[in-house]
Amino acid sequence: MYPQLHQWLPTSIIAPAPIVFSFIVIVLICIVKKRSGNVSKTRKAPEVSGAWPLVGHLNLVSGPKLVHFVLGELTDKYGPAFTIHLGVYPTFVVSNWELVKECFTTNDKIFSNRPVNKAIKYMFYNEESIGFTPYGSYWRELRKMTTLKLLSNHRLDMLKPLRISEMDACFRNLYELWTKNKDDNVWVLVDMSKWFGEISFNVVARIVAGKKNFGSKGDRYKKVMEEVVRLMCVTALSDIVPYLGWLDRLRGLDRAMKRAAKELDSVLQSWVEEHRQRRVSVSAGTGSTANKTKEEVEKDFIDITLSIMEENQLPGDDPDTVIKSLILDMILGGSDTSTVTLTWTLSLLLNNVHALKKAQRELDAQIGKERQVEDSDIKNLPYIQAIIKEAMRLYPAGPIIEREASEDCDVGGFHVPAGTRLMVNLWKLQRDPNVWPNDPLEFRPERFLTSHADVDLRGQHLELIPFGSGRRVCPGISFSLQVMHLALARIIHGFELKIPNDSTIDMSGTPGIISCKATPLQTNFKKVIVASDSMHAVQSINKIADPPWETNRLADHLASLGGCLDENIVYFVPQIAAPPWETNRLADHLASLGGCLDENIVYFVPLINLESAIIAKEEVANRLYTRLS
Image (cartoon, rainbow, N blue to C red; front, side):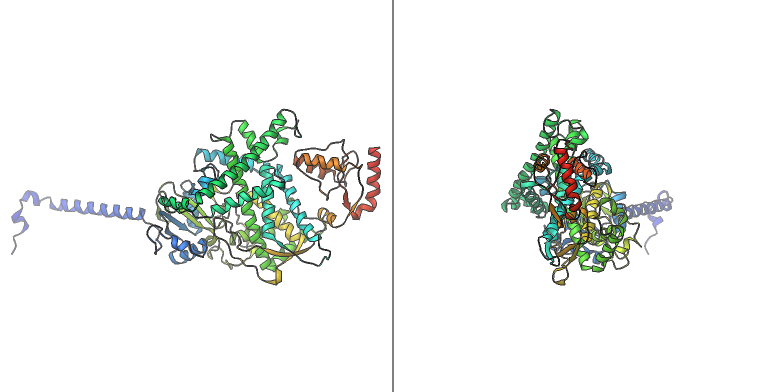
């Protein structure tokens, strides 16, 4: 028998033993609770297996499948939140609207930064642009200026004539392409991807820089922009493993980016200088814009930012750099998104002819066949709006939103350390059957008129966020929707469209931050459905008179303002004739170019609608003769 404990220990030690034991138990319970609390706080999202040394899971996302497809398959396996490693960077991937809500509401400030890569440093003025500058006071000032002074509803209304003018010109070009054929029943093949690119690029360039159709230098501007977009889609090894930057230099990537950045800066600086010189002539009382008010001089975004700079309200140390970075953001962000979305939208309509015909019926009912669709009609075209929503749901232009955590946070019970990159897979999120129960993979615009009629795409409804959400939501949503709604409505209202050879359009996409349609959208079109003034005048025209009716003086006057004769408008001064001689359209046209009616010039275009020529020709000649004699 072993001796009892009390035989070995003094009574003074044995007496408090129960108290000591209780204390130890309490301490152990506290430790366990603390550890369990720490475990919950450090609980991480499941990590995808198969990571390689050094490059992590890059092998999974660098194959032939598009990244958002791969992430979607991983979501099916690991759930709506998981972690992958892209090189040395841990990346938290989510595709569930509840988790996205936590990211862009509860933790919005933490996820307000975008990851910076080599392309941004070289070609976006080293993070000076509003799209990529870190969240802070500088970003807030840029955002405030952009929202209140550049992209406000009031400003967009003021710039509306420029937007409509460019859109009208692009549609006339498309119409004239068809009128070159003698047979009205001949289908004309057109690359709609390219045409949508032209209309989007021209509209944005006109609004931002006042560039009308880009003239002879347009190819240079477009070429450098295309090169910038191409290089942004090239993966730099240093963006994955920083100490492999020497391989980027070896393969010439750094050199290509620097060359593109230099050419881009030259283009943008020339635009700024053009505007600056024009403003100098205004202040000196010379030039075509002499004696103009501030409102008349501020014709585009560059003018507006120069005015802000003159008032010492422009953030940053280098005003020209701020202006150029804003120009770049506006042109690339505005034109690419609209082009890609319109291309996907028309592709979906051509593959779903029943939806195309339904949209045309809505247009015929609301607009009729005697005029073309105008901006003010869009509010009465809910199905057209639903089509754009559904297209952006199925094929968001940017299928993945990227952010970076500035500090530790929790999302859905998972701990996300500071520095972790966030990927929101919009492609998977916006096809979630729990949110979109009725055929989530099918093109059904009707859902936005019934079950999801209250769902908007401006960032407030987290199940549909093609423009992003939170602090970094796209500031140009209203402008983009204005362009896309009107362009789509006019194209399907004004033309008969069909797929060549009655085939099915390939809906494959391209890799990159912008997912374009992989193959051009070749479309057959013919026959204007709309008997609108501007289109019908091109179809049936008759020469009414030659000089001395002052046609050349009008052409010279318009050319000095950066415009040209519009053969679809009969030009007159108010003293010669009142409407229907289109005086107001001429005044609007000149105002959009920064000029005004000159009462010493007889405004006249040599082509007039044949239908009214029998009556109008004699009347016009008499009025002009009386005026000139």
